[in-house]
Image 1: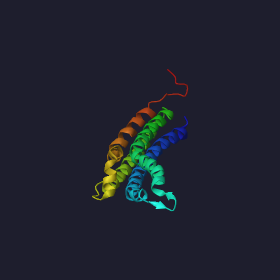
Image 2 (image 1 turned 180 degrees about the vertical axis):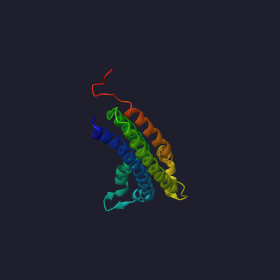
Image 3 (image 1 turned 60 degrees about the vertical axis):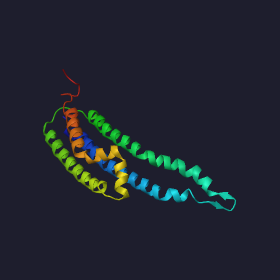
Image 4 (image 1 turned 90 degrees about the vertical axis):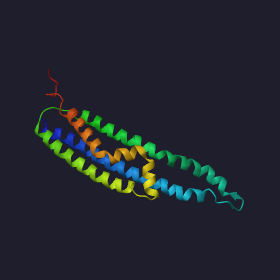
Length: 179
């Protein structure tokens, strides 16, 4: 049996979940910051007025309005991208599917426990930002999908890790897929 090959696939799967969790958190906070910044600066940029023969208000309407539309659509896009990352990690578990060494199952559960502990920490940090009464907290509350996914990430990561374990450790007994 290729023990190192099986361990590598398991580490890639758990690592992909760690990365997806951290990237999802950073994308959500980043989108909230960009949205907050856009709300502060765009009204001023749209009322620039006239500079010589150039109407800057008209130019800003042609450039800033499409940018604002993109910024307002970003929370939904980020939420869909995060769900796709989580689904891709399950596909990755299927790709590394193999039977064999049962001691790897205990290592997998230990790493999954670390993943859940990390997701609890990230969820708590996000909740601190989310419960803020300022404008930044309001921007995070507008991201309903990402807020749900990050606040409930310990449960979601537990379910995905257990589903990944079922997929990865119920593989073929031999490379040939024997009967």
